[in-house]
Amino acid sequence: MQLKHALAVITLTAYAATLAGCKTGYNRIYEESEEDVENAIDCNRQMVFSERSSKTTAVFDLVSDLSCERIKDAVLSGQSLGNGDQIVDPDNTQRNYATLINTLAANSSRRIAIASIDYAKDANYALDRLERANTQLKTHASNNGIISITWSPLNPWNSSLILGPATTRNDIAELSSTEGEPTNGKKAFDAQLDIVLSALEDLEADNVPVLFAPFPEMNRIGFWYSAANATESDDKFENLWRYVVGKVREKKLDNVLMVYAPRSGRASDRVSATWGYPGANEVDIVAATNYSDEIFIVDDDALQALNKPMGMTRLAPRNGDGEFDNLLYQTELSS
Image: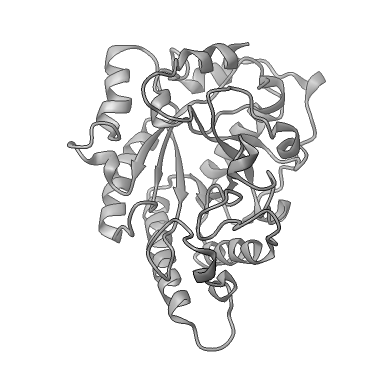
């Protein structure tokens, strides 16, 4: 995985806490780095939403500059902090902010640039719990940190993330439909989405930009919203993505950057690297997930061909059993 092609690392997983960014904070490294205009590539920097705050534009420009080769010798690293309000749960020491970010800051001069949580994944979290998590995210942002939020919504028909038997698969086309009486599945999905939008609105009230990645790993075989098999068309998913983008636009959330986060890695885990890509007009940043003990991103060329600013939403070992040497990531990124 070569820095010259990709890389602002958007968020590394919880096992990658050793990658803590730079000694004096990412802002200083960025400001003191030199533009590499000669090797710059022509990224498509068109943003999804015309209404955006100046801080949101600044975050987008930072990621764009780093990933489009304009800035040398700079990497943004991040930390996954669980789901819902686990980020502030004192009993969940493997996920909370105090353990994974504050402890590092207290014991060294290094800083983690990006704090990331999922607004769902293991449960449908109520708004008050997401706002509780937002309180910590706002503190991180007030210290010049960047916020990344994935949303792995649960199946509106059975409240599970996993697809289940193909014979019971429901048609996701009804979720993005705006015609006729809403189905029970659509009502359940819209209720989840309304909570997420309200939580994003809570961050907007404090002028906190968000790297927002709904439906992560949409090309993974097995999630309810993802590809069921290698031959399944992606048009229904693309319509669902556009439906969510439309709802964000209706809310006039000027703090949201849309992140497309497909699954990379072993072909047996997924279909095409770009399955479900809704088009450049619907995506601000392309940032894959990769769970592998090998560092390089096997789909790097396919993702670069989308010609958008790039990063990684997750970069983590396959098993997370404590046996993987995280310093391998640091060595690879540095080279």
